[in-house]
Structures are given as C-alpha cells and as structure tokens.
Image (cartoon, rainbow, N blue to C red; front, top):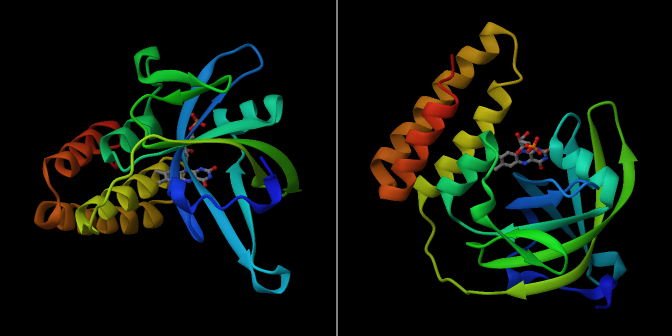
Length: 207
Ligand SMILES: Cc1cc2nc3c(=O)[nH]c(=O)nc-3n(C[C@H](O)[C@H](O)[C@H](O)COP(=O)(O)O)c2cc1C
C-alpha cells in the first residue's frame, strides 16, 4: 500500500475527526479496545495530501500498547452500545477476531491497520501520525443523520471527561450537559440509542 496517498473515505474516514473504536495489543499480546478520534487533514498547499493523526492522552491502555507496538487498528462502526461499552469496560474475547495480525472487532463495518509514528509529546498527550497499512471494508451502510445517535457519542465523551474532572462546579455543568443529551436521545433515538444511554448511566452515573 502506498501510504502517502491512501484515501480512507471509502472505509468511512473523512476530513475532520472520525470517531472509531481503536483496538490494540500489548507486546505480550493482551488485547484492548477504546473509542478514539482519527484526525484527518487535507492540505491544499500539498496537492490535497491527506494525513491521519491521533492524540492519545496519557494514562490509557491504548497509549501504552501503541508505545510498545507502533501499531493500532481502527474499527469503523456506528454501534453506539459498543462505543459506550468499550469506553468503560474490557471487552471479552468473543467480540474480537484477527486481521493482518491485529485484534479487530467482529462487528465493525471496516478495519484499517495503521503503523504509528510519534510526532509530538506534550505534558498531557502523545500525538501520532498514522500510516495506513491494510484496509478491509466489510459492509457499506447508508444511514441518515440521527441526533439521538450523535447525542450518545457526545454523552460518552462527556462521561470519560467527568471521570477525570475533580472540581464540583465543572462536574455540575457536565450534569446539565448530560441531561440535555438525555432529552435528545429520548426524543430522537431508537432502541439502540436508549439502550446505550442506559448502559452509560450504569457505568458512569455522574456522581
Ligand atoms: C467518542 C469518544 C472519543 C474519544 N477520543 C479520544 C481521543 O481521541 N484520544 C484519547 O486519548 N481518548 C479519547 N477518548 C477517551 C478514551 O476512550 C478513554 O480514556 C478510554 O477509557 C481509554 O481506554 P483504554 O485505557 O482502554 O485505552 C474518547 C472517548 C470517546 C467516548
């Protein structure tokens, strides 16, 4: 694969930030999954060259594994229940299969294996450039925008931040924001989105 020119649009990754489930393994072979954003940039000055990046905040299992193996897999899915689960628990083996020597999620619509190159280290995160190594598109789905689905993802991001927020004022604002997402899911979501919010409430009750 000519890494510099790969366009992953067909696999569901487009300009901006695409939320995926990243699967990794440690050098000892322990598997992990977590929701993470792929940052895609397109530079007009460089003949529209497309580049992929990821910021991994310190303390995550994903970061530890990437530092050990320089490899990760992006699983493209819009399964909101899965997003919420992987944000807060270790997935059991039954969810995984193998692709190009990497653990990936059986249910994903596409898999992309990337080699990672460390480009920046700050006090809070490591930023990596991602070089696509292998792609498999398993299913192409046509879906209209659903505000409920989007609200679940916002609520999940908020929940992972709530866990590391210590000041009570910040937490109170987050509770209000969470309530707003709850209302959107009630109004616009289907059964999957409502189930995802139930799981989120159970995993992170915002207390
Ligand atoms: C939709 C979504 C996107 C996220 N994006 C990122 C990200 O880009 N970088 C990051 O470090 N954490 C991100 N997080 C938070 C991690 O998923 C979270 O810290 C997780 O617990 C890490 O799990 P791990 O320790 O198993 O790697 C995101 C969470 C959600 C719900």
